[in-house]
Length: 389
Image 1 (cartoon, rainbow, N blue to C red):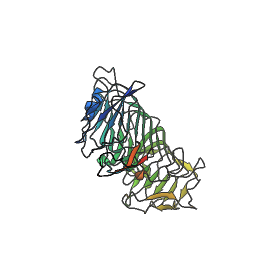
Image 2: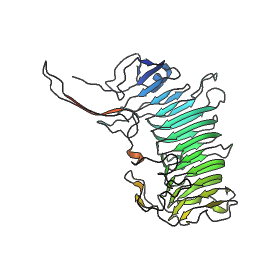
Image 3: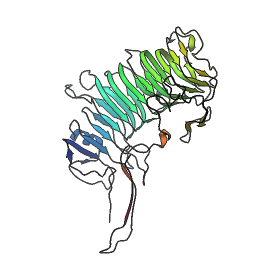
Image 4: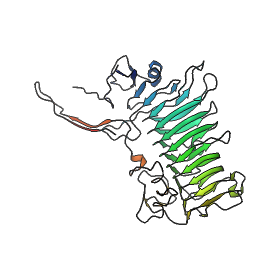
């Protein structure tokens, strides 16, 4: 007896409210059907705007995909809590428009995938405005807006972003407005280019190692993040921080000033630092000392440990680290809004579990046990453990 279980128990060729589910499945025992394809691009090409494309877990890596219509592209998640914990692995995702600019990827949702690079707002046809993109529960190497078209409305949440390229995991070159980057683990950091800066929020992230944020422009809010240094000299901000609101963050070994030009640079100006906690950075003064013009701040806590449960200073990343604040921590309820300083406070507090231990976003069958020998006429005993997430 051969049993094939899809991670969402998909019934092919079903349409609900005119929304069709298409499947990319390159497993050796993949089912056949009019809605099943061996590559993601073939499934995307067959889909209509508003449809769902499921990428089945597989030991094989899927190819790249280019999307020029509104779709939901979904896999099983980046940390799979089930028997045979395969991921939905693929190459690069490009969000673009078609050649005559009558369709683009506005409103696309990408979730539960393990992929290399995301290229949003690439031009196939004329320049356009890419809007309302959601990326969640993915493992990603790099998000890079390479200068194609501007972006308005782009949310990245609950992701594990691992890139070492250029020391940044998220890079917006052109105008990017209403961007929310929240509840992620970023190894390295984020750039918002100085050209036409917009109203963006970087909140409740673990930003680990190396250099972290470049931001330039009024209304960039950097709040409730944990900036964690992996070695001495790591800086919270790389080469530019101007006209930003920096509030309720923990700087843990990570100096809260720019690493290029220092705090005397004209690239470090008019920032407001409030209710941050700074510990063991080499210069725990807040706002950071130096000649940068117009930096100010109040309510900061300096030279006091946040008392994490298990996060050693100046060490490489480990999924075993526990950022829970111990009882008596100076960061508890010390934020400007009365919640915790760091990732457990603010508008998007982290769950009690570590981000990397988070399970898949999709409902899954965690365990499926059946008898190996079934005699004719016997019942089939089955034990199933499921997680609805």
